[in-house]
Amino acid sequence: MKIALMDSGIGLLAAAAVVRRLRPDADLVLSLDPDGMPWGPRTPEDLTARALAVAEAAAAHRPDALVVGCNTATVHALTALRARLEPGLPVIGTVPAIKPAAAGGGPIAIWATPATTGSPYQRDLIDTFADGVEVAQVPCWGLAEAVERADESAVDAAVAAAAALTPDDVTAVVLGCTHYELVGERIRAAVQRPGRPRLALYGSAGAVAAQTLRRIGGEPAPQAPATGTLTVLLSGREGPLPASVLTYAEGRLLDGTAGTAPVG
Image 1 (cartoon, one colour):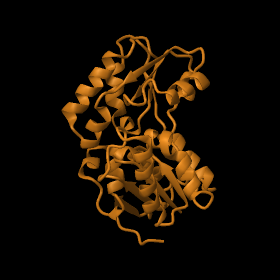
Image 2 (cartoon, rainbow, N blue to C red):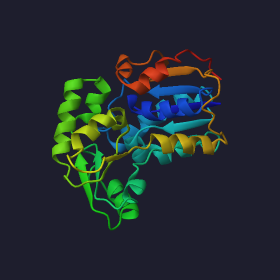
Image 3 (cartoon, rainbow, N blue to C red):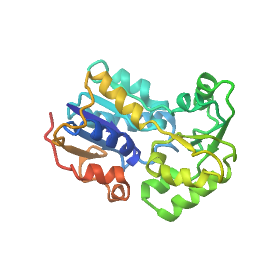
C-alpha cells in the first residue's frame, strides 16, 4: 500500500502521522512545494497550477491514493485535481471539522487563515453543518507561517493574538488549517478558561486518514510491522524532510521511518 500526501509545506504532517500510526506498513510519499509556498496569497488559478504540479510529481510514484493535506488547496484545486487524476488515482480533500464540532451544541470558534475566515466557502460550511450554533470565525494572522518555520516565539504571538479574539464561552475550537494541528495543545492552553470544562479541539487529520483507507479498501492495522518507507518530494525533486518538521512529534515519528522508495 502506498499513500501520497501533498501540501505547499508541512501542514500535511498531521494526516501523514495518523496514516503512519494506522498502517505502519504503508509506504508514504510527501509532496511539498518549497519553491512556490505559501499558496494562500496566490490567485486561485496560480494555486491550482502549483497544486497540479505537486500532485503529478506524487502521482509519478504510483500511489494508491492522494491526500490534499491543505484546506486552501482543497477549496481551490480539488475539482481540477480530481479531473486530472481520477478515476485512476483517488484524491481525498481536507475539510474543516465543523460538523462534529457543532454536534456538541456550541458555541464554537473556527480558527483559520485570514483568507479563509469569512470566505463564502467557510460560510457555506457553517450554514450547512452548524445552523443554529453560535460560531465565531477567528482569523489567525501569521500562525501557519510561524508553524512552517518552527518559530516558537512567532507561534506563541500568533496563538495569543487569535486567543484574544476568541470568545470566552466557546466549548470547542475547529482547527481550520492543517498547520494548526501541529500546535494543538498550545492552542488549547491559550483558549482554555479557568473553571470551564476542558476545551475540545477538532482537527481533520484523523477523518482524512480514515477516509483514505476506506477509499482504497484498506483496513487499519496499527500492529503491522513498521516496514513502510518515506519518500519526500520538494517541488518535484526527491530530498530530505525539512529540518523544521523535527520540532513536532508528527515530524519526528515520520523521520524515524525516513528512507527513499523507488519510483513505482
